Length: 78
Image (cartoon, rainbow, N blue to C red; front, top):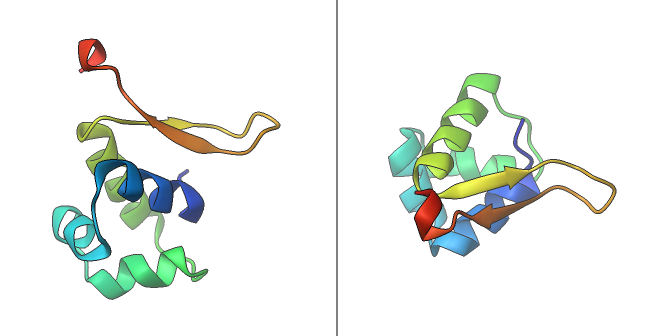
């Protein structure tokens, strides 16, 4: 699944604020803010968040001893 840190990093990589992500996911901005600040959210919402980011070119990197992260796809991968 996606972590709150990955959501923050992905938003930063794309230059999106909470409101823009919320609009794209179809949830209230407060839902995104609460998740990023430590409140759990429904699995369906997390799947939608991940899907929106992946469609925007974000690749999620799983925990590998150095912490979970994100990166942007190369233009040739998109």
